[in-house]
Length: 361
Image 1: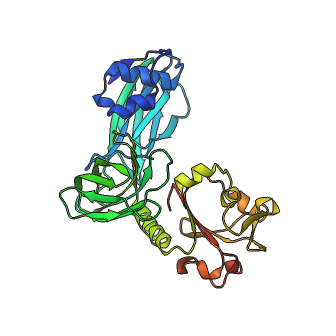
Image 2: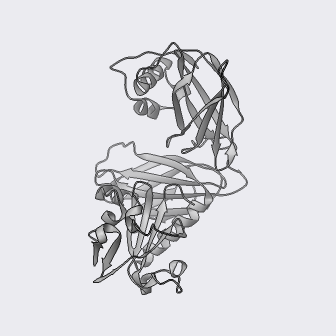
Image 3: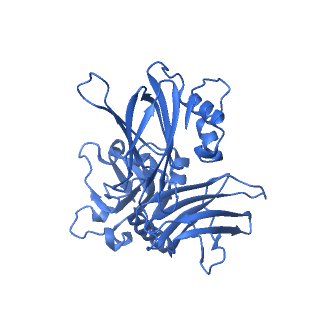
C-alpha cells in the first residue's frame, strides 16, 4: 500500500490506530495520519516511511520481537546503508526515515528463522506498507501456552481463576500469583474462557502455533464491561520450560518471588533497590552487597538459568531491572532449589537470586 504522508496535529497515536485492526484492514487515510503523527516531521524530499507486520506463515500469529532489517545502496555511495528495528507485541514495525527513490531490501528474522527477502520501492514523501511471513511454527508439533491473569486496576495477579479452552477438556487454575500453564496444545485456533467469582468473565480467541509458546497477559475487571487487555507474545519453547519451573518453585513457596508487574510497581531501577523491603534484607556497601539476617554477604546470581559473575566493584548494582521478567530470591542454603544449589560455591550460604529476563536464554 502506497500513501502520500499527511502531518496533522490532531492525528491519533500510531499505537491506537494499529490496535484496532491489522494495517491492511484499516482505512488508508487513518493509517497514514497515525503513522505521520508517530514519525513527526519527515523530510519528504528524500525520505519515505515503511511500515508493516511480521507473522508466522503457518498460523498467522503476530511475531513480537522480530528483527526487521532494511538495506539499500545509494548511487555513488561506497558502502550500502542499513537500518534495523524490532516489532512490537502485535508484530508491527515502523521505519520513519526510509530512503526515498531507491530500492530497499526488507527481511525479518525470528529465532534464527528468516522471511523471504522483499524488494520495496519507496518514493520520497510516501508511506509503504509491507507484510512479512516467517516459517516459524510446525503444525505437526504441539504448542504451549503460559500466562498471567491480573486485576485490570491494581495489576496484581488473580489466584484461583479458571482457565478453560472451549469445546475441549483442557482447563486449569491460576496459582497464588495468577500464573498458569497449558501443556502440549494441538495446533489450531481456540476460544479461551477465563472465569473468577469476583470478576467479569472474559473470553478471547488464541492461535496455538506448533512448537512455540504463547505468553499471555489477561486483564480482568470487577465490573461486567468489555476490556481490551490481551497481550500475546511468541517465545521459544525454552521459555515455556523455564516458566514451568518457575511456577513449580512458586507453588513450593521456599523463596520470595516477584513478577514483572510487581517489579514495575516497586519502580526500582537497580537490583538492590528491588530487594529492599523483603523480610530480613538490608542494603550494604551502597548496594554492592546485602545484609541478610544480620550477615553481610553477596548471594549467588543466576541469569536465565546460568550462574552470573558480578563485577567485583559494582556487585549487585551492576544489574538493572528493566529487562527482568521474573525474580526468585532464596535466603540461605536450605531454601535454594537443587538446580541452583552449588555446594562447592563459597557464596551458597548467602542464598541465591535467580533472574529470568524478557530475552530468555
